[in-house]
Image (cartoon, rainbow, N blue to C red; front, side, top):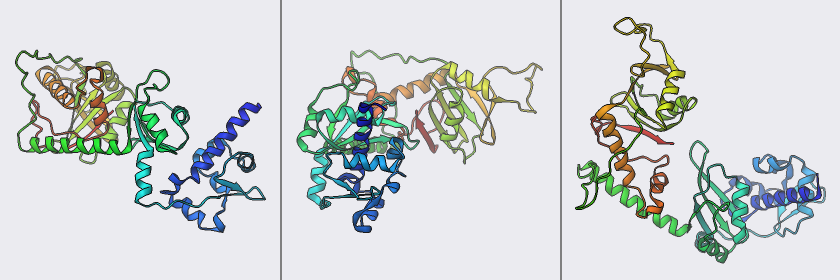
Length: 376
């Protein structure tokens, strides 16, 4: 290992140790706080090496001890036998004043590519000043949302980040706001969303808005053959099972389950994705192996697929019903678009990743159905 590589690794080890013993982590890490209350604050390095992030850097206790001992850190120290580490400064008082300053030091950034790594994001953030931590926000399936909270050591550095126009990796523009403004925006959005939901329940909304005078009505454009209806969906089947099954062979953009009708609607990224999934997943129904005229049914209509332990009948949505479905999709999307043409389309993704949406109306009567849904 070269000297430069070794120094880089040591820096990463020290920064990770400082994170574990830092104010931000200890404000919420009950395990670490419990360990600090034992043995005069000493924590064994072998215990720290059970933490995934540090373990990914090294599994050598002595390497951790040497990195910390030879660093300029003033936050922690190493025991004489190189087996333990402890914090050298007292913990802050986590009172209202601390929480207020914490909010002001925290910045919300959104717009990172989904494959960005913590190291890449941290490297971007520290150009504005030293940080206490970076929190990558994730969905329930652990996939990165593309947004983070970064906690700077000072309010001044946090403001530098908010005021900057520096792109991530020179191509990705980021939404920037401090944590206080983030919560204000989210609260305003929730009020607006709740109002829309209340209007929908009262029958006061849900239909497409009429075009203003002189405004051209945009034609709904879509690729035919992307929507699949599933019949006989059991109540125990959830959208994750459906999405996971189809995603092994193609890309699913949206799943919506109507439990009252034992049906589901699956929207694929393309007609080719839909066809490929059915070709790969179709199974034979012994009672309906052939069509009425004795020939095999090779069309996408009435194809059986297996989801879990269940055989489910599928049907391609087409014609007027398909058009109405896409009108409904366009209507929902338009409710969440930015006013600026430059940002048009982002707000739909921004607010609908994994979120529930208002009940929708199109040709199929589903206004009373209970739904389970997910946006890819």
